[in-house]
Length: 386
Ligand code: MG
Image (cartoon, rainbow, N blue to C red; front, side, top):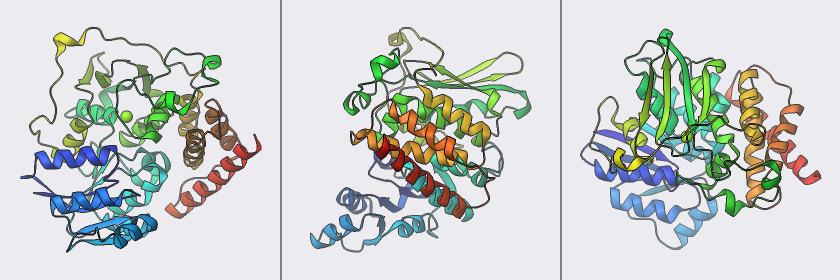
C-alpha cells in the first residue's frame, strides 16, 4: 500500500489523482489532502476516502466550512501556507502529489524531497523556479525521488527507461499548439480569456490553459525537462503535434527515435507516477489507432508566440532569471484573465520584468521567494503603467 498526500486536490490534476486512487484503492491510500478555496469539495473527498488530515491556504474558506459545520467528525482542518507545506512531511506519507498552481508549489516540493519522500510532480513551476535546488541529477537515476506527472515529461521518462544517458541525442517535447495555432499577431491582439481558455485537446485548469495558448507552458516545460533529465538546452527541441497523440519523444545517437503515445488523459501519467516501476490496469480506454487518422508535425511559431522563446532564453541564462520570468508570467496571466491586460501584453510584461532583473546564482529557497516577490511587484507596476 502506497500512502499518498495530494496537494491541490480540488484542481484538475488533483481530481484526476483522486479518480486513480478510487480505481486502485487496494494499492493506494490517501493520508492527507490540501486545497485552496474549494474546502467543501475537499472535505467531501476526505469523508469518502477516510482521510483524517486536511489543510487549506484559504482562511475564508476554512471559516465558512467551520461555520457551516461541514467538517466531518475525526477530520482535522489546518489553515495557512505552512499547513499546506506541512502535509508534505507528514510521517505516514510515502508519496506527495504536488498539484499546486504556480510558484506556490516550490516550498512543498522542497520539503517533500528534504523529508526523503517521493515527489510526484505536476507543479512544473517548482522546477522552473527551483530546479537548481530540487534536481541534483536526472530523475532516471535510481536515487532520484522525483516522478514527473506532466504528460510530456512522463512520456520522456518512459522513453528513457533502460537507456544510457550518453546515447541520448535530443529530447523532443511535443506541443498541441493550443487554440490559437496558425493565428497571426494581428489576429491575437484582441484575443479574449474565453477564446484562450478553449483548449483543443487537453482538459486543464485556467492558468495552465492560458500558458498553453501562449506557448509559455511549452517554455516552462523546456526548463522542466532540462532539470528533470539533466539535459542541455540545445538538445531539447519543441515540435507542434496538434493531435496530442504523441506525448513526447527521445532521439538516440544511432538515429532511432522512441515516442510515447496514448489517449490524451492525464490519468495515464498520474497513474504511472504512482505505480512506477509497475504498470496497473488502464485508467481510460486505450488509443484506437484505426480511428486516429493522421499525425501532423510543425515547428513552433516563436515570432507570434514569444513566450516560448522568452522562457527558453531565461532557462539558458539560468540562475534566478527563470524565477523572475515565471512570477511575471503568473501576474500577467492573472491580469489577462481579469481583463486588465491584453493577450499580447502577457509576453511584453514577461520580457519587461526579465530585462529589469539582475540575475544571481540560486543559493536558497528564501532567495527565490524574494526574487519571486520582486518580480510580482515589477509585473504589477508594469501592468498598471501600460
Ligand atoms: Mg504538459
